Image (tube, rainbow, N blue to C red):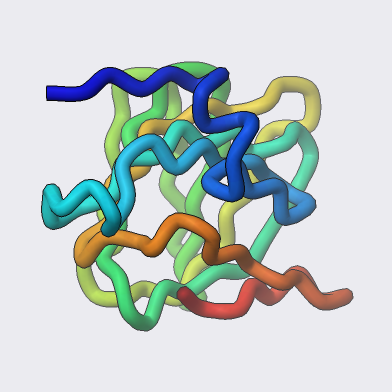
Length: 129
């Protein structure tokens, strides 16, 4: 058994700030559990286009609100108590509300190494993990 806190991760390379959000990678490939768990904060008023080509992701919202929009324009409102699942390596837009950060618990499979980060360009297109 082991225990790890947000403050433990904040002082390591497993705390990633890539502009529109931060991610505390609490559980990574190194831990040999077969999945990654992250504490993710999406900054208020941001929009990012993202796609995970090598990982499936599920995100459970614990604070704030936002929407997730597919490329065909279908939008889903995400509020505390809602999970959204990117089970087809879905290309999507992540849109935080203007006034409030959004806090998520994100799970990745296969696990992240822990130091991966998106690089956003002027069109807010995030590189894939």
